[in-house]
Image (cartoon, rainbow, N blue to C red; front, side):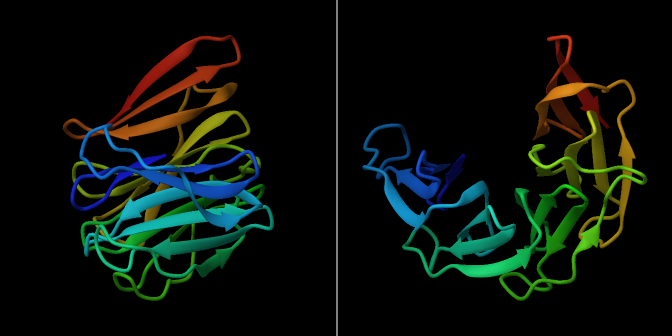
Length: 220
């Protein structure tokens, strides 16, 4: 998973074969000068997510095998790292994004629920989770989670529920209400969807179906 420090330098976050959390970064803004990988520790990581807050600091999240979601933030933009703090329980696959008002949102998909967790204030405590599960659906553990910000500033969560792509779109920018639906014609998804915002209004999705075909969908 690739992100950039506020000063433009790239940094790569990954889960190692030892299930620990690792990252590698560079002193330059291009591929030159990558340092050796460094570990955050751990050993039971299940999924990771990263976003940059309004203050310019990166926030790196991970869910472990017990379903605990933790975050570690930079102490200052493009600087060192602070300590891990626990965000919530009940996360398996996670994704993160930052709203226009600066509050970070984390989407979690588990066996039974799809939830969105949002900070009450930028860098502050977390509000109660918002359940955005597909009515009558059952999120399958291991399905990939996506969370992106559309060009109009609204959040869009994407996941797979029993082989069908489900989406939850924020009703208003920075709002607490979401509308959830499934994308018709996306049955039997086997390769988890990848969601990309822009250019322009809308979200692009790419996924693979059981018949082996690759499919591109544009959500407006």
